[in-house]
Amino acid sequence: MQRLIRVSKACTGNKRAEAIATLAAGVDGASRVRDQALPAWAEVAAAIQPLQLAMGPAELHGALCGWLAAGGANTADWLRSVMVDAELPQPAAGDTLDRLRVASTAQLDDPQFGFQLLLPEDEKVAVRAAAVFEWCRGFLGGFGLVPREGKLTDEISEALQDMGNLAAAQVEEGDEDDDARDLAEIEEYLRVATLLVHADCARPTAPDRRLH
Image 1 (cartoon, helix red, strand yellow):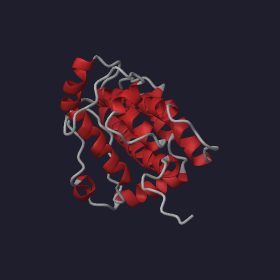
Image 2 (cartoon, one colour; image 1 turned 90 degrees about the vertical axis):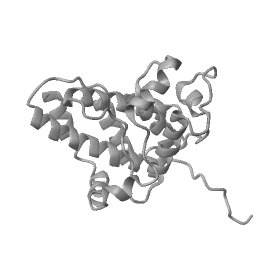
Image 3 (cartoon, one colour; image 1 turned 180 degrees about the vertical axis):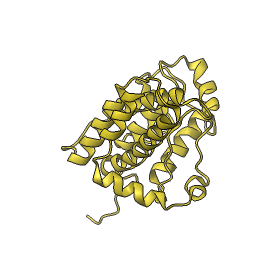
C-alpha cells in the first residue's frame, strides 16, 4: 500500500496537530468514550440503507463532522443540511442517526480528546483504509457547505490539504503489518486534525452573555 505510506509521511508536518496527539495519547481510552460512544458501524449502515443515500457510514460521519467542525448548525435536521436534500426525513430523537449527531458533537467538544472516526470494525486493512479515504471525502464536503468568514489559518489549510490528499488516495495491497501501522498513524492524525479544525473554525454554541 505504497500510496498509503506516502500519504502517511506527508501528514506529519502539522506541529500543532502533533502536539494535540501527544496530549491525547496520555488520556485513558475509557474516559474518552464514556457516555459518548458512536453507534456501531452496522447500525449506521442499516439506518441509511432505506434512505438510499449516495454515501456509506464513514463518508456520512465525515460529512457530519466536517459540517460541525466548520460551525454548521447542530440541529436535529442535520441530515437534510449535510446531504443538501430537504426531502430527507428528520431523524427522530434517540434513533441511530440522531445518536450519531449527539455522540459526534459530544466527542468534538470533549476536553479529554475523545473524538473517534466511524470506521468498520474487525475488517482487513484495505477495507478500513478505503473507509478512511471515504471519511475524508465526506469531511471536506461537509466543511465546504458552511460559509466561511475570514481566512483560514495556515495550520487549518494544511490539515484540510492533508485530508484532500487522503480523499484522493487509492488502496493498494502491500504488507499487512506495515499497512496497519501506517493506517493507525493516519487515523490518529485525522482524529487530532479534526479537533484542531473544530477548535479553530466552529462557532460558539453558547449564547452571547456580554453586556451591551
